[in-house]
Length: 481
Image (cartoon, rainbow, N blue to C red; front, side, top):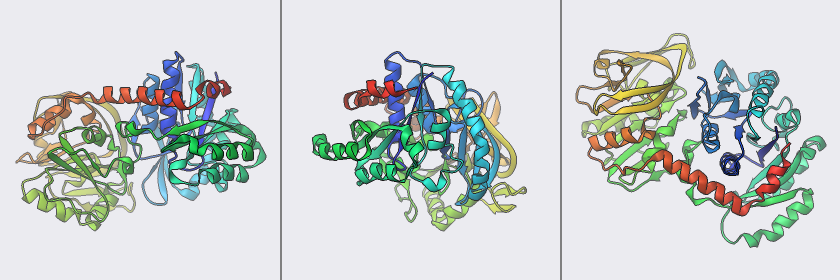
């Protein structure tokens, strides 16, 4: 079955959103379509229907296709744990934690499972739309490449290169990419797209013609900036607006250095009655905050040190003294306890790290990883919750006698005696419209009653229409082979 590949002339040029929009456009044309990203680097993962994990962007793209996310859609996922090391997930399962130099040696062996997943996907549909990672212009990484041109040549997939005009220098982005690629890689590229244009598109006509003339590649169109992009789940925590919404109920979320699985935040950011503020490094938690969220982390002990370095432990203590509430999710839940113990050194050097001491629990890290979709019941409101768990470590202690939720009748999470400090391993809980409304109502906030999933579906339809209006999608899809 045919496939096309969208690569970027740089990072964050909008590849993920373009692939999601093209997937939805193909679906609306009656095609059976699947997304594919050979290698992704992200701590924002999704739990798949077949019991593994993939990048959150590929889960959104699967939604655009109208299918469940599967591990084959992102066979290699790198989850950074430190500045120089990352967990390697292959076809949904962790195989190792390696440093960057070690991954370079491991990478060539991963082409086989990448092509295995790709061929399996191709057998299920009419079209596969592939997303590259970073940029093929990073030719220093070309040897053993499985993410961009290495995969494109191995799978014989035609490539369309995307440049981001919003950041400036788009002519150099695309012409320069051609200049540094070797002839075989250049021959695999069939054309280009200009993305994120603001203003009168006709003002770029000369630049567009210059790129076509210098490269010999055809242009498939100029895509104006899509203003509804904020309604789609963010792939990067920095893509969540620093301050979202203007409602009376004020939520502050700590932007941890290894923040992970922050899809809990997107639905809250779109609630009109909520004001969600992402607290960045060097900023204090505002004194008028109602709820502090400590989100998930890929390195709980490392982010506890980071949290303290920012002075957020002092801010949280003051917030609690003022009567404020705190919700810790996954790694954030572990941080709320008395101790985080790592006897095997799974997150660095073996040892124990004192927690924030706001819940009477302690966590022991273990190599076993919990990775599952969950149906639970919130104890406080008796409301059902649909979510997922993705973590290492087990937490126990006296505050577990007051669980946050119950999963098949079994206690999950912990709540303080006064009910203001809450911890849970459940991710994605606020995507559940019923739970989000019940949770906000219990805290005196005014929920909108809107359906988050329906909002995302409408936005995907609008994105597809946006691309249909500005790209030659017929010609793009004819490229596929």
